[in-house]
Image (cartoon, rainbow, N blue to C red; front, side):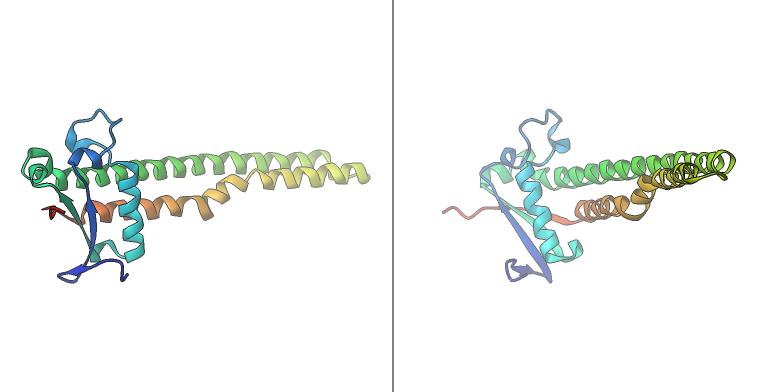
Length: 184
């Protein structure tokens, strides 16, 4: 964390730009306070916070020319950044909820399919020779494989989304300041 200076016990993530417009995606037609951050700016902020380790121990400082800090966009920059990360939190939370719904539906389908496979195995392939045993074992395996996706969601897929939502929640509450850049 030696890469970041400290002020008041917080690690400072410095971002310099020639204008407020450079910080936001030019493709986003939304009003200023609801625009998406430029992907490079977003990536830099997230990488810096991850390097610091705790968003509560960091603050974001934008350095802009004096003409930019005094205009409405410069004055509204902290709100725009907070809105962006609040939106990202909402999107990620929605993705997580959707994944959990898919996981629940997949579990119901998988268990139903497993039950049917076990029932067919019991009723049609419980006796007989090798061919019956092979088909019966195949039904057992296929039935259990049907539970693969719900188990994958339950064990692995949900927590990266949860972590991203938690990070975005912390970023939306992070201190954001706008300062006049020192002319070079």
